[in-house]
Amino acid sequence: MSIADHRDRAKPLPTAAVARALARAARAATIALAALAAAPAFAWSNHALSTRPALEAMPELARLAPVKVETLEAFLAAEAPRLEKLLDEQERWAREHVPAYPPRPDALRFVAAGAVDAAELRRRFVAAVRISPDARLSLFLQRQPGEAPDGRAPMAASDVTALPRDDAVDAVKFVALRTGEPVPPLAVLATASDEPDYGLDLGLWEDNGTAQGRAYGFGKQPFGNPALDFGTQAPFHMGFFHESRIIYAAAGFLKRTYPEYRIHLWKTLAQHALRTGHEYWGWRFAGWAMHYLQDLTQPYHARVLPGVGTIRMLWINALHMAGWPKARNEAVTLVSNRHLAFENFQRTAMLTAYRERGAGERGGAAGLIGALRGAGGGADPGYADDGPRAVVSRRAADAADALDHTIAASLPARYVSDPSFEFGASAHGVDLNALLSRDDPAGRDALMQALAPRMADYGAYTRALVRSLLAGR
Ligand SMILES: [Zn+2]
Image (cartoon, rainbow, N blue to C red; front, side, top):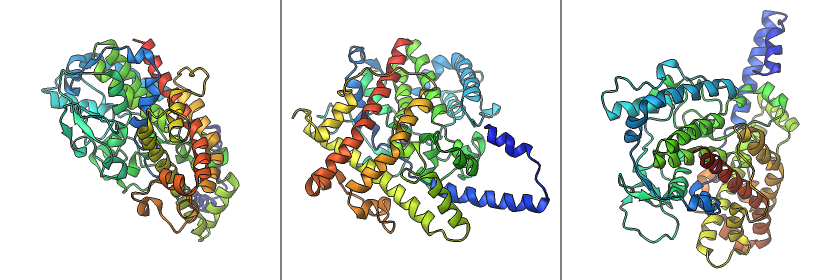
């Protein structure tokens, strides 16, 4: 709880009427600002595309022997008594270190004894780590674009992800893994780094109309539309840690974002699995942990309204409360459009980079792969538990305004400066990298230059996490 919260509580209010008026105003402000934060759910589209080059720059990972594929149930059966203790410790850590953490209800505590079968053990684990029971958790790999067939059976997207199809998922190919087969750690990590976007965090809030939402104790969804499927995962994949104090005072719910909880939970499980000979799950949990860390390098996941100053935010909020919602609605649409357009550009540029691979990493799209690999020079940072908040999201938040400006200046106005256009609904199949390369190479280069430092952070912090796991084995 912040100092401001204490002050608000301690100060007696003059009369009941004033108290009611203030409560009404606070509610209105909360509702208006909640809509401000109604950003789309995904950050970087397809994390695997970027994780792979980031980790290829680590010889210590490439040297590791392939790991043996194991079902989640087999891992749980072997480790259940130890996981009981581990998850208790993790819960203690989260309660102590994650601000505004919603404690896991004691009824969900992971208990090994008395589980009659593997399905029951899995059910208990899913509840204890509070992920969606619809998460597939199947054994699979994501193929790289252009990768030659390797004899593994193709797998339908619906066996891998609980989310509906979209452009990004449609473009991805999955293959099935068999229990016991050997697979390189890097392939497991890259594949798993995309998995938290496949439905792990869907419908977890009390007002999502799901059984898990009612049981998990996360409270009401802090922002976004609770009826919109994949919007429900957003507060786990964003970290609004660096807004101005007055914004938190008007909208305390913005403090309720939980990537730190997820990162530490999956990292703790990864460490345990690696130490106890369950390397496949070790690297798979590690991939889950890195997903949320990578999301925090996305400026639109680290700031509520990039490009909109505090005074203007409060002003459009005041207008909305006074009955003029237009400025608020336009600001939300523009930020959402820029967010989506930026991710479209990043995804299509990465796909182009993969196509051009081997043609030399000279710049343009291929320069992104260099940035992910750390070609810009300098040593990678270390990893610390407070890093996601103190460093990673801070760097993204600091870059947000300039990035927003570059996006507005470089992409066609229709996509990023027209509040009557909705990118998410109307821009299916658009390839912004190809479009700019054809019509405005200077605009493409400006965007590429703004994207490269974010990809450099993505790569550096991804490696930092893996290095800390390798050191702790
Ligand atoms: Zn995400």
